Image 1 (cartoon, rainbow, N blue to C red):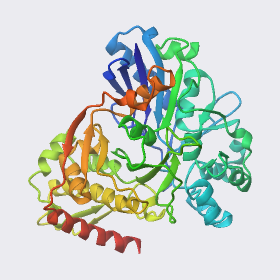
Image 2: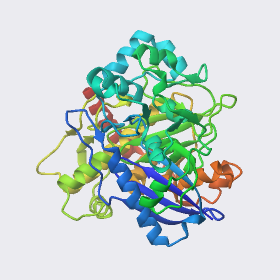
Image 3: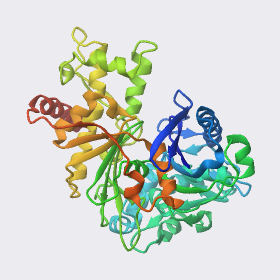
Image 4: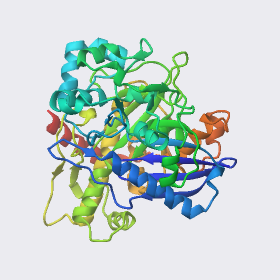
Length: 494
């Protein structure tokens, strides 16, 4: 018996096939091989076409099935992980009305900030755990104000994972975890946040039917089966945003456990058992995959928008054609810690929540033409992202999280030894790189939802620790480089 998982990212769609009894990933595929386009018609905007997501999902499924040649009837269930905070609008015929406004789009910042002021800081933080900020609810309000002809046609609003499940099954449903990431959920009263919808003049009927994260949320339709190659009737039994799913994939489900990821954006995600928030909304609290009102499990998420996207940009714009990330790592190894004084601040991907929603742009500091080379840029860029993680983690620590270990996957920036060592030495805690990824985690999540696994521990019991980094007590050189970078940042945000 097999479990199938999808991970709908902003760069590509990944799919994994997991053998249910052993927990081993037997095949992985992604499509496309290069990053999907992000449409930016104006500064600060970021959109993607959901139809492209679906097309790529069909192609990656066909690719995976061709690799394995398994009988599709042996796939017990399907799980979906997806990029958080996106807005997909459909009409009564389930037709997409406009491109999705995705997670890194910052057009709704002022709308959310105004709601925060009008509704009151205490009310928002105590009930929503966040400012409405630049989240899905505020993006929907932007559509209402700026595209009324589209808004009037909306039948349901969906998160990206809701959309993918709908295309597979024909059912438009959502989850509490999903609504919380869109700031549609009232944690104090355990219901949809009516007071925010009323303030925004948004009809509650636009919210889809609620389903549990681990439950049957639809079955593959005949139409979807014909274009994906899957068996008609295969149940979809798990759905979660990429960061809660990443934490679950790594076995982070209990209080004071922490996961991190370094993809297009960088994220640190810690689990707590009580409502928690940051007065400046630099940290965002969402319902974790195993959250229940009688046993709260909240994920405290700290996001760095300018992370892997900066490194990918640098590779595309400044590296030699055809070079790999591994070859870039080799080139920068002789460059000393601190990149001989070259410092890069990576915040060039929209508003940054850890900077209280400021949109600073990226910055290169202390460039010396007679000293710095291409390899220096590689190192400074990677260190700049690592430093932004450390800066953010120091904010997160104020919530009371003090983990001994941070768990990360093996398919992102943490594959870099330089990146991982920088973070480990500055934070002073162990870093475990676990052989898994979001698509495999989504597959295992479906195993819980379908009843194959009895609990969370059974689902991730086969996780393999691929590599462990231990902090070096002699971290003076790292600390000196970080402090210089932090001073640059403080000047930028004053």
